[in-house]
Length: 101
Image (cartoon, rainbow, N blue to C red; front, side, top):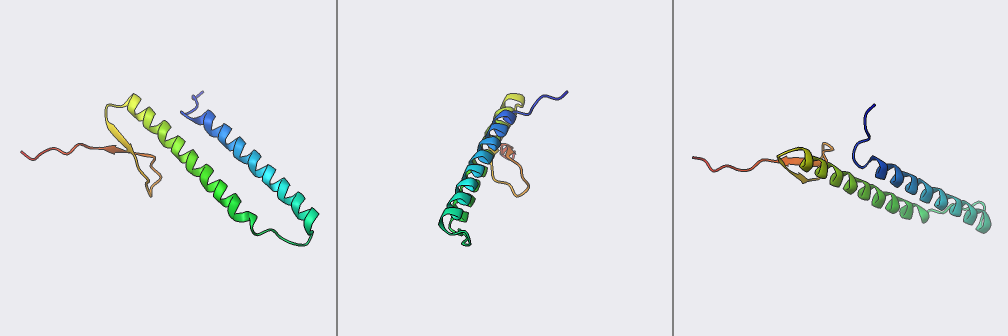
């Protein structure tokens, strides 16, 4: 049986917290909508939910990058940096430049 990757417990806790917050917001919006005006929609709440989701996603990616970087430094003699990648890489290896002889 394989061990959990680094940061897996944090990821699960983070997901549970996000889902709980979204559920709470959803219930609040439904309650608010039914009390104020049953036929009206609440378009103003969408950006707040999206901003919350974007912030949570960025925190999640930052935590993944940190865990990947710590793992790479602990298990490799190479050098690595965190870098946004269009290919989904959390960290990239850094190769030293050598002076031409």
